[in-house]
Amino acid sequence: MDVTGTQSHGATRIKHGNERLSGWLFCMPMLVILGVFLVIPITMALWVSFSDWSGRGSPFSSHVNFAGFSNYAAVLTKPGLAQSDFGTAIRNNAWYTLLVVPLQTLLSLLLAVMLNRRILKARGFFRTAFYFPSVTSSVAITVLWMFLFGASGSINAMLSWVGINGPNWFNDPRGLIQILLGSIGISKGPSVLTQHGLLGLSWWEWLAGPSVAMFAIMLMVIFTTSGTFMLMFIAALQSIGEGTEEAAIMDGTNAWQRLWHITVPQLKPTIFTVVTLGIIGTWQVFDQIYTGTKGGPSKTTLTPAYLSYSAAFDNQEWGQGAAISFVLFVIIIVMTWIQRQLMKDRKMSRRKTAYYAAMKAETLASAQSASGLGTGQGSARSTSTGDAEHV
Image 1: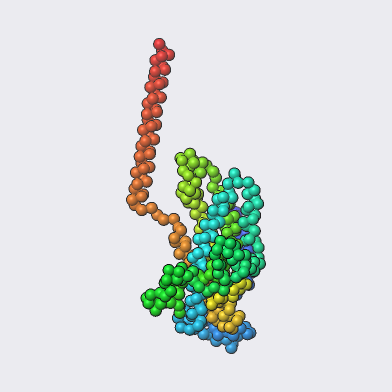
Image 2 (image 1 turned 180 degrees about the vertical axis):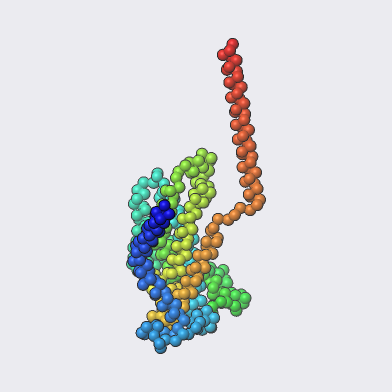
C-alpha cells in the first residue's frame, strides 16, 4: 500500500517536472531573443557610459579604461558646453511633455466620445480618417509639416487671409512665454531668475517656454498620435455599456455632467495607460527632430534622445552619449512613478467614511421599515380576506 502511494507520488512529481521543462522550452526562443537584442545591448551601453570607449573595436577590449562617473559628471555637474546642451535639451523636452501629453489625451478622449455615438453616420470613415496619420511614416509627416509651416507655406498663407503675419515657424528660436511677456513690455527677467539656474541655464531661460519651432513640432505630434489613443478610448467606451448613462439621463444630467462624473471615472485605467504611453513617447522623441530641425534653431528643439545620438555619432563622445541615454531612462521612470502616484486611487478620509457609513445605515433602516410596513399591510389584508370569506 505504501509502495503504491510512493510510486503514485513520484509519478506526479515527474509529471510536474515535465510540465516545467515544457514551459521553459516554449519560452526559450523569446528569452534568447530578449537576451540577445535587449539584455546584452543594455549591458554594453551601461559599460560604455562608465568607460572611455572611442567607438572603435570592442568596448570590452583591454585598451578601454574605466572612467567612473566622469561621463555623467560632464552632463550633470561639470560646467561647460556638455552640461549646457543637456540642460537645454531637458528644458525643451520638459515643455514638450508638459503640453503634448495633456492636449493629446484630451483630444483623443473627445474624438472617441464623439465617434462612439450611434447617431453619428459614417463612423467607420471618420475613425479611419483620424487614425490614418498614426500609421503614416513619421518622416513623411515631418516633411509635409515643414512644407506647411514654412515661411511661405500654407499655414502662413491662411493666416494672412485674416491679417496675421505668420512667423517663420521652424527658424524662430524665441520662447512663447517670452514673446507674450515682450508684447506687454517685459523683455528682461528679474535678477532672482537671471542670476540663478540649473544645469547651465538660468531660471529665466527655463521659464521661456517652448520655442515657435518646438510648438510647431508639438502640433505635429498631437496630430499624429491622437488617432492611436482615440482607438484605445473607443474600445474602453464600448466596454462600459449604456445602462449607467441612460440612468443618468433619467436623473436629468446634461452631456457635460455625464462625461465628467460618469464616463471619465470609468475610463480611469485607460487614461492611466494613455498618459503613461504619452510620457514615455514624448521623452523619447527623436525622428521628428532628426528629420526636421536637427535641434535648431539655436538648439531650441534639441531633445535628450537626439543629444545622445549627436554626442555619440557626431562628436564621437560615446561615453557621454550612453550616459545621457541612461539619465533619460531614469527621468522616464521617475516621471512615470509620479504620474502613477497622482492617478492612483486614494483612500477615503475618516470623515467621508463615517458619512457613507451613516448613509448606508439610514438606507438599510428605511428599507427595513418599508419591508416591515409592507409585511404588516399584507397580514392585515390576509386577515380581512379571511374574515370576509368566513362571513
